[in-house]
Length: 355
Image (cartoon, rainbow, N blue to C red):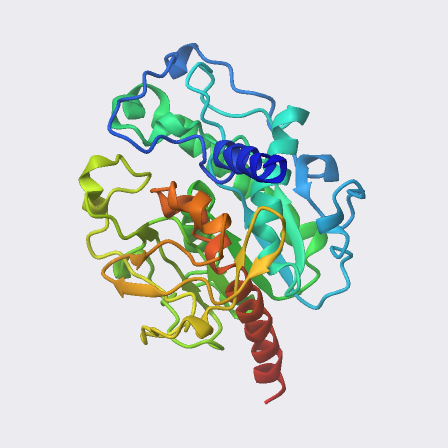
């Protein structure tokens, strides 16, 4: 009983902090405290010249995090990863998070970096900027005009500045994987437009993994959605939904009404084939940092991935069955699939250079 209770409480903690886990799953409106942006003083802007301005950096001493031990700058490719929205306290009137809030930074590392960004660490040296992410209320139409747009743009300017510093000081000509989730992926779409789409830097792009945001065919000029497991130079994107009988009962992070013409990648087969063989699923990264393979089947794809409760045995499947919003798991659900696929794309990138 004690062991089960311990797992249960860990699960609840996971829901609270992991990848937009502070969001609601019912139709009750959240009453946020707020302030007009014109009366708001943003937190100090990071310069990114110091490794202290980065959540993860190969040159940063992060020995306290065992899952970052491999990030030693010895790989031939880099990964530039941007974390999702975890700044969502409804009582916090600030529009943007504080990069120098060590408590919040630790939450970002222990959640998004640990359970998401690590999927790419065997493919490249991991860089993840600590940025003044926009508060979750910026995605609520009630708050867009009195500060939401400005807060969101401020967050992107941090991402842009960090990438410029990365290119100048740390990249050294290495090819790049771009990756993120939710708000992170959305900012990376803008970054790809500015730095890669129709630009010379596209030659250095191995792949952009952009789950948790909405991308349509018209969003890019030159970059394209990739449709094979070893293709390089393009992007991948998906949103994950749980198959529910009464989906309208829940106010999900991304509502289907906004998915019109959304592009979708299949993070199991990496092509248009929808496999019903559960053995094709490589692995779900669970709370204990163990990977559970043969757990997920994609039931259908209709501008999003639709899956049922993952099969991981008792009590894990019981616990995850209570979760109705799978936006949180866009990466975790396919963590091992992403890890293996990113390695394959890196290998194919260098193979093509030799040909």
